Length: 326
Image (cartoon, rainbow, N blue to C red; front, side, top):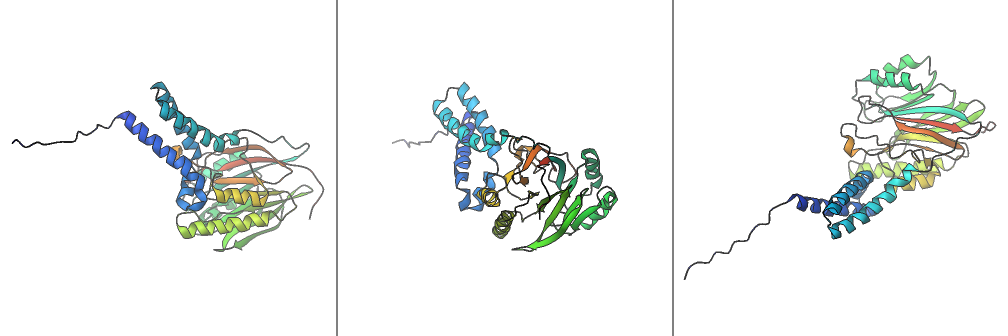
């Protein structure tokens, strides 16, 4: 009796097979990140909502051409899901405050190992901001910026050789400008009262730990929680600006914004990704400016490259005129 050999015929991998697999992965990440509060890895993937939206639209067009009804249905759902996170950031710009005091801020995480100081100085010259807020400020950077002291005579800064040096340089007079150490890791934060004519404005800046480990994530979350509670206590017009190492779509960010009572200046100006500069398709928005009521956002955009892994952000604000406040 002859030996019968049964061989399984392997199904060849096709281009559409890969696209189907990509759709399944897209569905897993788009839906799974709805539960980002349950694990830090889910939170990390929640930062890519814009990329998920673009991917779902591209895949939907491809499967629609081939009339693949099931995958089209899935992708319509994914497109709607991701659009609910992304599209609201493109509508609802503020109206300028009548007779408001207008001022410009430039914020940059300069990256501690960045030697391209001339690029930042050129951008400061081009933008001519009223307030400059820098993070990852090293002693080399601080020495370089001493040349700005005539134009920006008011400042408070703490240089560090690690990633957490911080500084504020202002054309406006500063009252009670100081660097404070904040829990849980005693990282420096800026607290300053900016004098805009007769008005007083609170300015706060922070740079929490990056979420590269469980401990780092916990420390960032604790610092943001404490900061949100503190920002809620002031009755003075307030601006927060900094690299928070988190996007608007993460539950920890949403809790911070809700607790602080501030609103993100991106509203109406789009996603404005700032990191990582070296791979723009994966760009995410982790550098933020938030303001209180009575402050209108006239402009919010990314600056040009300065040799850092972050792009700067440029923000133009208008604060309602009022009498002096304590």
